[in-house]
Each structure stands twice: as structure tokens, then as C-alpha cells.
Image (tube, rainbow, N blue to C red):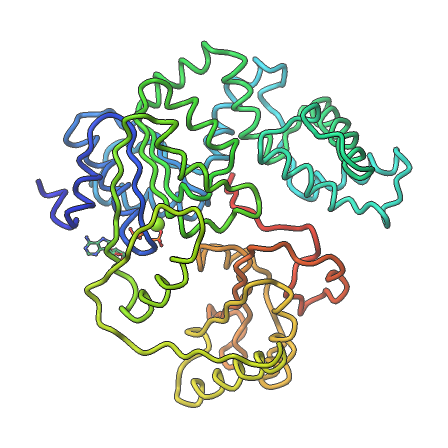
Length: 438
Ligand SMILES: Nc1ncnc2c1ncn2[C@@H]1O[C@H](COP(=O)(O)OP(=O)(O)OP(=O)(O)O)[C@@H](O)[C@H]1O
Ligand SMILES: [Mg+2]
């Protein structure tokens, strides 16, 4: 079968798996998306599954677009399955069926700004001083609650703040409803509620989407998992591909247990590990392996590669953040002098608080004046919080970007909002980038 020519033995096993649940545990650059794409083609071309019976979900519009392109190329034309983000798949379902929940099908979708504005109004009505009770904190708390599938009535009666959150959440939800509006989290949450409230609607979608595939499964949160589980029903033709070592959204609701407990929830699951990496050098892979082997709660896999050893990784331990930033800048200077373009360099840092010093020293040393917004860079590293700026040595408006990247395992610390403006690298507290893609 031509389709299998460019797959390694484990990838083939995953692609050729027939009916029933399939958990593909795989490392970075091990061909996860390749497997999903080939499996879709296999289902259509070899098993004769009609494309419209297949639903493939991923986390960003960009990832969905890429997957679509790869499937299209492999199929060489013809009808495509629904390949989309969780949120846009839910928008489709809700536009058609939300009337079962008492909303109008032309509902509005509130973005973060709209939600925050509404929360501000509610706080003002409740006479809560925004200085003491910033709307963003409430927005984040409501966001967290929704990500784990909680409604206002499920909120714990905790301390003073938690009680206020529960109150604000209840009013907020009621206002949204009255305005026939949904926020981003509602899109998935209300789809789950719809399926739970209207079994005949759920049955219709189960009958339609008989094959479900989820890429970047480690990033699903509780409510997305519930959605997938509901849709998979007793047919359980559910294939998920994830990396238990790569869960970058744990801080905003992604639940690694979705991977670890998959076997319990889907009895008879077939598990395939993809351990061959195609992207990195041996040195990088070995170092990464040594770091992630310390992770708790992992299924465990050992990545290997046929790629060459590559350059050795340099490791420096420095006194403080200023020394770290100076060291990084000196290294950049060295590479630059050797003729390497800034567009080919990246700085990663673990928390956003670290970016400020790096930014200051870069500015001091190189005088980069203009740091662009981070929207366009979101997908660059597959993580969020990547901040690009224009390389001054290239013409303005050019495509040359250099990137800072923060793996946002932590929310930015409160109190970091002051120094904003054009040079801003750090997001204000409480604002979080999100893997949405509606
Ligand atoms: N069997 C294979 N033979 C040769 N190259 C492969 C094979 N499988 C994957 N690759 C290559 O490895 C790279 C990564 O593939 P892919 O994007 O599918 O991996 P991934 O695991 O989804 O990566 P990510 O962690 O970024 O999501 C691509 O360049 C792809 O062409
Ligand atoms: Mg991928």
C-alpha cells in the first residue's frame, strides 16, 4: 500500500488500527501529525469511510489548517473530513442545535475583552472596588472554573474572594444568556450541555462523526475530554495522539490524567508508542530525555533518532537574571558576528517575568526599538507566549522576525502590568494566551 511507504513500523501499526480506541503516545517530532493524517487517508481510501464521518480536532487554527493541507495533499483531492479546532467544531454544532438550550442560533461570541468589560460592569454594580478586585482576576477564575466544567452552582463556598467569584460568575452567566452570547469557554461547555440535555441530538452527531481523531491530546482539558467521550459513545472509534511529557497547558486546565486514564475510560484500548524522533540531533534528544524522565505521572517512553549527534549543548549557571541576560546577549553578539541572522535565533524563558531583563539588556546592547505583538508568533514554537520583534538590520515591514519565547507554565506574577507600551514583552497579569482558534 503506497500510503504506508513513508511510515516506520510503529506508525504503520497506528495507521492500520481498525475500529476501537487507539492511544498513540509519542514524543515531539516523532510523526504524530503524520500518523493522524495518514490514518485519515487510510480510513477513506482503504476502509471506504465517507470523509464526512470523520472528525479531526486540534488546538489552533494554524494546526488545523496544516493538517487539512497535509490530508488534502495525501488524498489528492475529493471531499475532506471536518478538520478543525475544538472551538470551531463546537460553533458549527451550536449554530445548528443551540435552540435546544434556549439560545438563538445567531448567538454572539464574546472575546476576552468583551468578557472583561461585562465583568467590570458587574463588579461596579456589586460595588466591588476594581482596585481590590481586578476584573482580570475574576475573568481568570471564571475561566478556570469553566475549563474544568464547573457552572456557577458548582463553585465551592470558600473564602471571601471565592464567594465573590461565585456571585459574579452567576450574574455573568445570566447576562451572557440574556444577551444571547457565549464566551469562548461556553462554546465547548454548552456543546457538552447540549449533548447531555438532548440525547437525540447527541445521537445524530454520534451517527455523523463515527471516527474521531484528536491531535495534541495532552492539551485537552476536562470539558473537551467530556465532549470527545460523549461523541465517541459506545462505538469508541477514537484515536488520540499525545505526549505525556509535553503538556504545556496544564496551567489552564489541560489535564494530563486524560492521557494517563485513557485506558480506564476506554477499555480494550490499543496503545502505540512512537519513539523515533525525526527532528532533533542525538545530543538534544538525550538531554531532553534526561530532563523529562524526572516528570511525575508519565507513561514513559525513550526517544531515539537516527540523526547525527550534532553540536553539544552548552550549559551555564549564572548568579542572577542580569548575568543570565548579559550572557545570552553576548552569545547572540558572537553568533551575529559569525554571520548568523537574528531571525534564526530564539530565546526561551520559563516565566514571563524573565523577559524584562532580557529585553532591557538587548535594548541596551543592540537597541532593538520595536517589539511586535505576539499574535503572529503563537504557533511558532507550538507554545504560547512567543514574542517576536523586528530585526533592525532588516528593512522595516520585512518578514524578518526574531523570537522570544516563554513557555507559560506559570501565569505572570501580579504587579507586572505597569511597564506596558510599545516595548511591552510581558502580558498584564491574568491575561493568558489561549489555544483557541474559532
Ligand atoms: N517515518 C518517517 N520518515 C521520515 N520522516 C518522518 C517520518 N515520520 C515523521 N517524519 C518527519 O518528522 C517531522 C515531524 O513530523 P510531524 O510533524 O508529523 O511530527 P509531530 O510528532 O506531529 O511533531 P510535533 O511534536 O511538532 O507535533 C516531519 O518533518 C516529518 O516529515
Ligand atoms: Mg504535530
